[in-house]
Length: 572
Image (cartoon, rainbow, N blue to C red):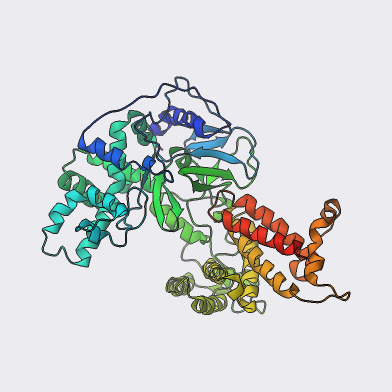
């Protein structure tokens, strides 16, 4: 590890202390605000496109006050402290016990920009601009006007090119603009705010390793070259490589809604250790990163985040981490060929009679045979990899909104890999979402059954590889509750009981039952429960769902589902 990483710990601790204003449990002294005034083109550009002008997206580099308060004797605050080790570098540690569901910390982005390579995006609200090229050639639209002004220098030369009207030329220029936006914005921040420059310099970039890789050559040609030659900026190649490395290593993908996405740099969030079984998850809401504990975290325990998708097998996660973060994970999930008994990387054994529960598990190294845990049958690694590439290709071609195609592909992959394999799980998750995306009244009874079945399987897997109050669990619970409530409603509508009343009338009395008595009852599985027990289980699941998704855009849907269920139960 670079020895400078240990030396930079005080800088990051000072930054940690500066976050007291958005973390109510912390306290920190307040220094006088400093003002910065400049009329240079670069600084005016930075001010013009500061996302603090948009109430929905906020950045920390507001030029009306310093990035953070200078503290002479930095100390840890609240629930956190920063420690250093030669193995992990700088990392966050809980300084007290943290309960599952507690907010660990909040943080505003140091830099916020469109994702590299996403094409024309508004620099103010992050909206993707479908008609951007009409705008930059003369048509005025509010969002796209921002993009047109920023890339004006590039466009001056591009429009004179004989192939300017070709779609390929415009696409290449669009990608170059979005790729250069992040380093350009960061350079403006560093110039205007020395304190921010110290924090960015303290973050890990792996620039020396990356310079030797293909990504390093790309940055030198397309980012450094563009900034120096096209924009005539006096910037050092080493600084640009560091900035790009910091973002590729540390940045978070953030979304304001389905049409506005970007990536942001959160220095405190960046030093959370990685784990494929993280004890926190994060949300980006109202311009602030909110990090919550999904499981109980003991004092002295590392605060962890995951850098990889949860529904991804061990080899896929390892390849992602090696390519983007330049390290290898050694968590207990990665070291277990069965992935803690979830078998999301295992494939079905075709030789066993118990084919639905007989798994051929991956070896502990590449090019070794896979082996069935039941019959000891072996499969060559190359054969399994070929099968998985074919499965991945099939999955990638399926439109996520095509219900019938998802249904056929799901059945195919279940026969090919098994229903627990991560590729099958991805398609089944998409199938469940496609079913529940329809108006409830339009969903067929069989599809409701499928949605409930898939949600049960996904919750079982999540309890192993994504335990606690995770967002994935919340989203699957929401789908399960909506589907189960609709099934219950249909089964109870106008269904007479022996005494001439209806099931709906009987269910209406659920809310009046003695709560203490109900707490002592051992509820059966949903399929075997009475209507009253089903309603009780759904309400409990709804309460958990709301607790998990309280910072999520899906919270409104969760509340509406609970209200619908309560209204149905009380409608006697």
